[in-house]
Length: 455
Image 1: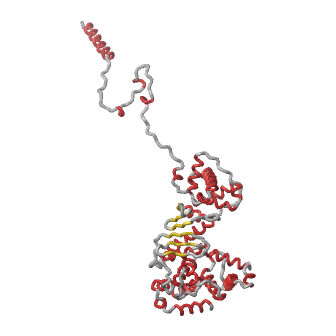
Image 2 (image 1 turned 60 degrees about the horizontal axis):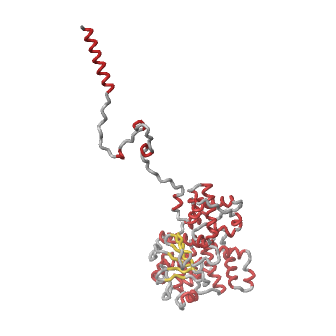
Image 3 (image 1 turned 30 degrees about the vertical axis):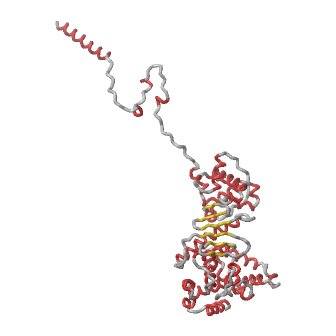
């Protein structure tokens, strides 16, 4: 009996196990999900004979914009880089410019300043394309924007052409002029700005613009240095040092520069007069109603010339001294040429007083100014302030000091600054009361100056 019961029990257990294996499990409960959140079926979940599609099998990956290796160049603001980049991206073959740069006169095209593409696009664009390709291939993208090494790279480019020459533009000049803002209009073909300083050229005439680069650099940096000097020494009272400076470059052959009031716009005919006119624009103004025109003109020359903020003024005088040293003026002076006599006398007196001109740093500009004023008086050959004033303004000037030349007025101001200090001399200008400011009237001060000049 027990054996029968055990057998029945075993059979019942086997039946239950068989039933549990054969039964399909219930499907999991369905949840409400959006299509974008659902998990795509795997291959094993697909019905037979159904191939998975890309859309079924992959989630959509976000698309990333490819990195632009020239992104930093596109906003450089330098026109030569734009031309070079366009040629490079279009796989344009650059020209071999060995023959072009074998002519030293063409070296100025290597400056690649923006205005060159207005001045002579036909020559400037090939240079831009070639230099861009060389610097990029040899040194990489960022080297194209490296102003500190740009001169070095340009020399390397010349050597790559087989030319044993160097690109000699000073790096500080290169960097400064590369910062220019250039534009053009119907009246002024070349408008070149550096912050609040703008130069207007109707044309560069027949000469290449390299002749103007010295002016742009040395006058602009000199102006900034002059303003810093005035402010740091508290000499800027009554002067508008925050104004905008507009230089209209005439070069019309007259040789005279002037500042027009009340705008303060400056019209330049001589490179060396630009800082002089800047002082007028700042507020040291001339007036035919003043009895002290010599003082305003002398002060403008004192700050704008003799303190040496524009180094190129001293360079021009050193050149005259070197010519005199070589005896160039001797024959003309012997023949009675008064200009030659003045130059010869200035050189001889300068050397006799121990003056040096071998280096710019050793050149004594105040001494040169004093000796030139004395040489003018000795030869009695010079244009007076009254003469110049009438030529420029068309009006007679007969005020005190009208008989002096500009050099003599400058020499007199130098003497007054050395004797009384620059602040008192400026007080004399602002008050227009020479005697109250300096304790002596014009005639007595002039006599003191002449005694100093001829001691």
